[in-house]
Length: 594
Image 1 (cartoon, one colour):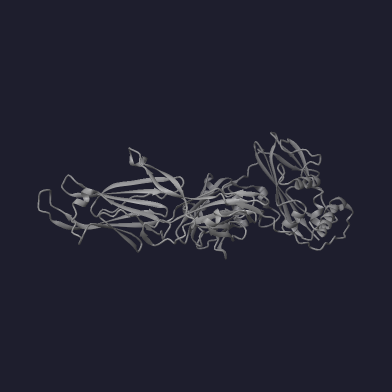
Image 2: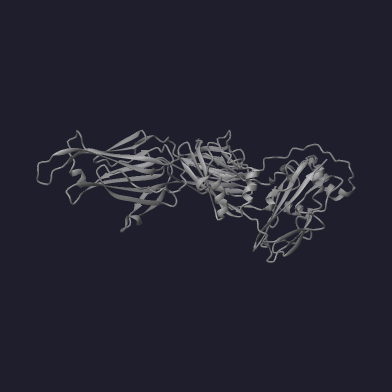
C-alpha cells in the first residue's frame, strides 16, 4: 500500500474515533488508485480431456432393462480448449489446444469469478457424413483471489447424431438383389439424407439442426410376394417411418426385420434403440410391429442438458443458481413507492462455442396453488413464460440479448414484490436453446418466506435503532448502530453483505481490509479479522461468535467511515445469521447526506 493510501486509511479510521468532534467540516482526500491485479490461479497441467467410448453391455431379459457402460479415452492433442468467464465481462480468458494445456508449466492467472472450460473436436461438424463423430464437453470452476484451483478431468461426449441401420437376414432374403433396384434405407434429417445399402455397416453422423429433430426412415426395394417354392414375383415396396425427438449426443440404432402374419400378409418390425452418451448414460428402447405404410414410433422427451449448450448462472457473486434463492421482508426497501428490491433476481445465459441464443422460455412450478392460479389468470398456461422474443411479462421482467450474445433475464422491482406476495417454494425451470439447437435445462428454486415464525436467531435493534427505517447520517450526526442477537441453539453461520453503492465502493472496502461479502465466523484473512474486531463486527475481546446464544453486534464505530469517503447516497448492510433452526436476515439501511 503506498504512503498516500496509508494517510487516507489513517484518516478514515481516525474519523471512526473522533466522529463526535468533527462538526460540519468535511474531510476531503484526493482519490487514490487501488491495485486491481489481485488474481487467482488455475492449474491445468494435470487436466485430462477424455472422450466417452462406445462400449455396450446388453443385459438379458426385458429390452427396457438394457443398459450401457461407458469408458473414456484420452483426446488428441489437437482438441480445441477455451476458457470463458461466466461472470463479469464474459470474456474469453484463454484459448488453445489440448497439447498446449499438457505443455503448461505455470498456472494461469485469472480474475476471481466463475469460468467454463470447454473442449471440442478440432474439425467442424458436417451436415452428414460416414464415420465422422465429433465430441465436445465442458466443466466449471471458481477462481478465488490469491488461491489456486486445480481442474483434473473434462469429459467430451458425442455432439452430433450417430445413426446405424441393420436389416435382418430374412428380410434381405425376400428382397431382390440384382444391383439395380436393390433394397436400401434412406435416413433423412431435414434436407440432409444418407442412404444405407443392404449390407452397410458404417455409421452416419448427422449435425443436429434443431434441439429436437424428426428423422425420416424410408425403406425401398422389390419384395417377393410369392410363397416358398413358387416362382418369385417382385413387387416395389416403400415404407416410411418417422422418429421424433432426435437430439445431438444420441446413437439411433434402427433395426428392421420382417414377420409373416397369420393371414399371409407381412409386417415390418421397426425397433429403435436410443443410446445417449451423457452422464448418467441412458438407454431407451422403442419397439412396435408396423404393417407396411403404418408410420408412428413413440419417443420420450427426456430433459437432458446437451453438451455445449448455454450455461445459466445468477448474476451475483454470493449465490449459486443451484442453491435456493430466499426472498424475505429484508429483501425490500419499503421507504419507496413502489417498493424497491435490495437484490433482484438476474439470470445470465451464456452460449458456448461461438453460438447465439435462439430460444428461451421458463416453466414455473410451486407448492402454492395461488401462485400457479395467478400465472394462469395472467395468460401463462401451464406456468410457461416465453422469454424470447423479448417478453417483459407484464412489467415483471426485463429480457434482452447483450453485445456479448448473452441472454439476460432480470426481475423488476414489481416482479420481485409480486413474488413476495406468494409464500412457499417456487421453481423456475429455464429452457434455453442455442443456434446449433443444443438445449440446456436449469432449475432455480425460490423460497418466499413471509411467516412470523420464531425459527432461527432473533435480531432486534438496541437503544432505539430501528431495522425498518433508513437512517440518514452526516459527519455531524451518526446514529448508534447496535443489535441484540439471540439463538436458542447457538449461531452456526454469520455473513455480512455490504451493498455500498457509491458510498462504500469495493475499492474503498478493500482499503479498509473489508469486502462486499464477509464471513464473520471464517474471515478470509487475519487482517480482515483484526479490522472486523476493531470496528465492532466481531467481539473486541477476541472471542468467537460461533456457538454464541446471546451477543451484541455494535458497528457504531464503522458508521463515520461512510461520511469521510466522498460518495453519497444509499447503502445497505445485509446480515444473514443461521443456527440449527433456520436463518434470519436483517437489513441495515442508510442514506449518507452532504
